[in-house]
Image (cartoon, rainbow over all chains, first blue to last red; front, top):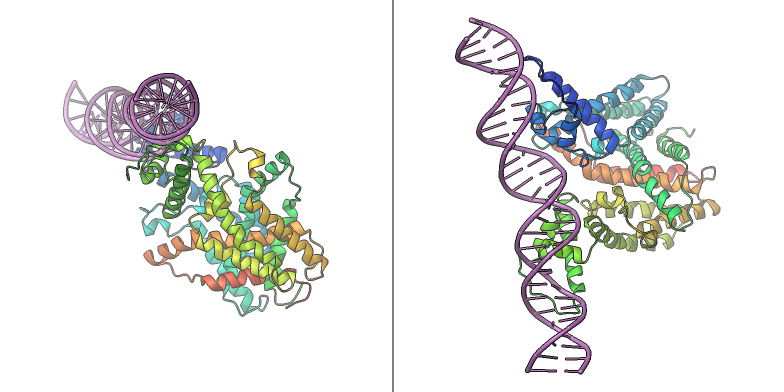
Length: 219
Length: 219
DNA sequence: AGCGATAAGTGAACGCTGATAAGTTGTCGC
DNA sequence: GCGACAACTTATCAGCGTTCACTTATCGCT
């Protein structure tokens, strides 16, 4: 309850920014959309809860906007790799690694970004420049490129190959951030004997598996 | 509000079963734990909401119990495949396919089962026979087996390979059930041009990618 | 048959949530 | 200095998970 001073007459947009920042921070702290309440956001900003609704239609839109901003960072990290050096396959490996790394760094936000869907009341226009879609398009293009230049085996559609790679990276991020931690914890609590994979080795294995199997010539 | 008749004195456990069934059905209908309220469960069973608490400590435990029952079905479908015919690699392929198929069939429950964690107040003992853990152990054992019999390339730990395969299947199920549907819908709504993968081809591609890349001899 | 014990279930309430409507207050242009 | 409007608050609503105190029906026992 920072007891903000009321903004001057044309400066209402500043509150919008403060709300977005506070929401992003709370989301990263608590790791789940449900735990972030409108009231807690308002409290952190130092404002009453209905003030949120002066700038966002509802909680869903606010969270989507936050996600979209974080997605911009995601896109900024991945898009340069589309034109990195090396063969298309090497660029795919880089991309996969960076994707997983980014996902692990943003463990709390990743599920919100990649498992939820955009608000139902979202107009198609707003979704147009969605950074996630842009990266996906780039990935498919990169695979298509790899097939054309002979680095990737033909036979499968570029979309299937791209989505298969996405599947591997997506699954790895989610297993590492959501399943592995509690399995690890509960194994030590009970007396079940079970070895768990090393994070880095799992990442290497996923990347290797996906890239090797599509490579035109065995590495 | 079916206005149930009150059960006789030793028959209280029947309500427990009715609650579990109603919860499973509601969960499959609505596809999210948050949308299933204690009150809606109670209403469907025809009982007042505090009655739920006569049989379950809280919502989390109730949902975990439902998940655990569904997990039993999951385990029942997968465990036979551990001892199916063919090489370890062929069994892994079967397993991967069945895993994804099961996930797609239980699209609403899959995220609840595989993304949430068990209740914090769960005692280690209760988690002991968790069917998910059993299947995971079987998967690792199968990979270890495959390495020993020379069907799977050594060099990576069995845990890393097993979890890499899990990653691919996990990611494929989640992408197919959560991302692909709304991407598809929003693409047609806006005028973005983008091809999407065919479901069956994506599954084939993921399974092929993961199994081929670990195979000792190229298929 | 009647009574005490207990299982089965309910009604009302608490503090939380997202959201809305109506009201207040500060600030700007004229 | 006054009207208009932007910025923001207070009060409120319905619904959520959960708890407590209460009722009611059934059982075993004398």
